[in-house]
Image (cartoon, rainbow, N blue to C red; front, side, top):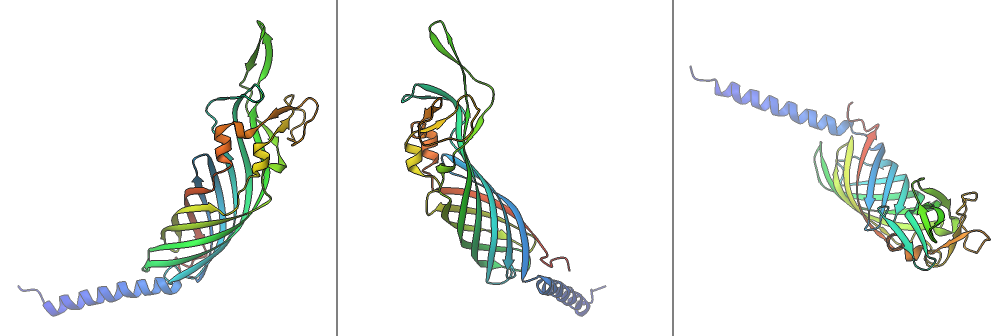
Amino acid sequence: MKPNRPLFILIIALAFSSASTVHAQTHKNINPYALGVGFDFEGSFGAVNYGIPIEFRFGKTTDPFTFHIGERFSFHNGGDDSSLYYDPLYGLWLHEPTISFTQFSTYFHARWNCWRDNEFTAFVGAGYYLNFNANARVNIDVPNISYINNQFVYTYGDGSRRFYCSDLVHPLSHSLRLEAGIEMPLFELTVFCSIDLTGNFKRNVVKNNIYYDPSLVYRDVTTYPVDGFSAINLATLEDINDATRDRVFIGVGLKFFLFSGYFK
């Protein structure tokens, strides 16, 4: 028996109409705002940066443009931690020194959703970051020094000690971020390039002497000599010197959005 062609065409039409209705309803239910929380990671040749952004998204992912305003907390760490360093200026061995600081950023992003449907969107965008830098540290595994057989012997292994150096970073800095990725109402995956318009570190502090207490009684680093303190010049440590000059970072981020209305 031959199939009933008009009935078959009617079934296909009804199915297509139903799918279109579901997609249209999904688009209708998406809220024009959502709260996003995520995690991102970025790195340069000499430093890494871990961040937690919290933001509001204004506009639907199916709109031509969306805008994002948020706050980002991040932890920066620079310098290699894989070997001993000898400071020829002061004749001192240092084990696994690094520098680090925390950063609080207020940011604004604008995105163009260059390809979009009711489920997935591809976007490109740019953002501006106003950064507040604090809690700068120089992390050193200070050696125990013994004089054996007419020579100094350095013993390591007690773990890095944090020395706080408030003069090491600028309190305020500015950054630009260029990004591209895919998103849907529930989440987004982003790759980005972050460019520091102003440096985070004070290069005059890096290039000149700073002084720390090797007995670990005082943890504040000074930029002026103190009796009993050891001197160190961070610029003589190549990896740290490079990390304090890096301004371009490449990264990836993942973010999830609440209150998007996707499941209505």
